[in-house]
Length: 234
Image (cartoon, rainbow, N blue to C red):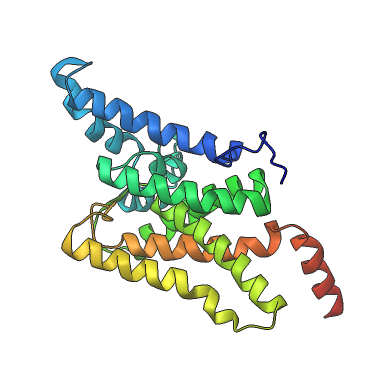
């Protein structure tokens, strides 16, 4: 029996996943170092709060920009900066693990650029849904919305595979149903998934999930060609 000693024990992460994961890790390391008093002096304890104030997405800010017609860059960047700041180490850990697991699969099937596009477009859509439908003044932080965008893309992959083998495609949505139920459970009892200042973060997650699923029709390999073919048939 032959063996290949060059096969790595652990499959390496796609570069796109690593590039998005590093800012999340770097931010959390800085916060932990500050909390431990290893750098920054007494003010370091407030680094996380300062980052949330600077980079979190806010429905109130969206309303202000819409009413005034002013769209300053410092606020527009919040649409894509909020996923990299978390409210606690636990949130960062859970979101990071989920992103690595799902993002790796999506990047391997769709390619790195498509995965990055889904990440940021899901972040933007999730923030918009949160801001427009969230109700009470609150803020949005954490990588859960773009992670749900990745889950939407992964659900599309399962959906396509089930269609090719003639299976019930509704089974592809089992994962999102389970995760939303688990998120509700943990939010109620432990508050682990509450990445926003209110109780409407699930709206951002669902909006991001729908974005990831729908974008997959275009960004999956051959997706644009299939869409053009269907349009021509109509």
